[in-house]
Image 1 (spheres, rainbow, N blue to C red):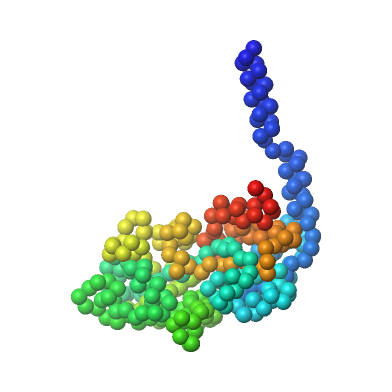
Image 2: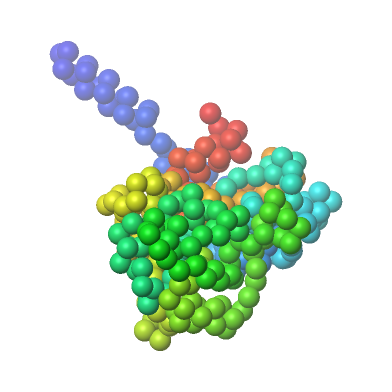
Amino acid sequence: MKKQYYFIFLSLFLLTQCGNPESEKNTREEYTEIGGEINLISSDPFLSLARSWVKDFQQSHPKITVNISSGKPDEIVEALSNGKADLAMTCKKRLPENALENSWNITVMKDGVIPITSASNPYLDELMQKGIEKKKLIEIFANKAKYSWQDLLSMESGKPVNFYAMGDIYIPDKDGEDALMKVEQISDEERLNILEKIASDPYALSFCNANYAYQCMQKDTQPAVKIIPVDLNANNIIEEKEKFYDNLDDLQRAGYLGLYPDELCREMAVLAPGKPDEDQVIELINFMLNEGQKTAVEEGFSRIRNITARKIMADLRGEE
């Protein structure tokens, strides 16, 4: 008899813990039926992704209209402050000072920028074995220090490093070393010309958007360049845990797990004038953090952690 009561109790418990399928269906339909209008402004490096996201989002939310425009960082801040934009997409490092403090913002993905050199670099074997110390790479990346290959590889002698500026990387403003960083926009043809210069210069060093670098290396017709591994713990050797450059998926996973240095990543932020409270805006953010991550990964970005996405959405929806 006790067993019978036990199974009755267990059955009731399981029934109460399982969600009501009809209720969940109604909830999904409720989100799908949300209508309204959203004005979204994006900086140029993320405009293509923004358009892809909006196209996919509107297929599942046909009653929501999303208007997309592009702008520079100062224009983005102005559009948010004067009410012309409900949401903005841009790189955090490109924003003017205090812009993040004066707005609601979240990180929705990361974009790795990787060091590259010519495949004819005479120090290539040592580079693959030792890598370059993270601190030194970050200093070069921010244009705050110049090194020779001797300094980078701790050798007795070595040629100077020939640094090449690459599109889609940060370069300092001319006002000084403490100025904000910006992204230099160049065409694919100009970018290819730079890659050709790097490939033909044995002592070259540059930084390239990860997705573009892997695309180039997959094509036999592209210039011969090599990715330089980062020595994360500064022990002058690339260990197994630091070997995540075989393909873009491995690098993206390293970014997702926080192994790849944040200083060599662009954090793409979504901003709003204040904490979003309109249903259509919250739904678009939900799409960016969940379904949209697949598209972001396909375009070479590293996705954010699922637990981070859940926490953001729980906060926006007022859930415990």
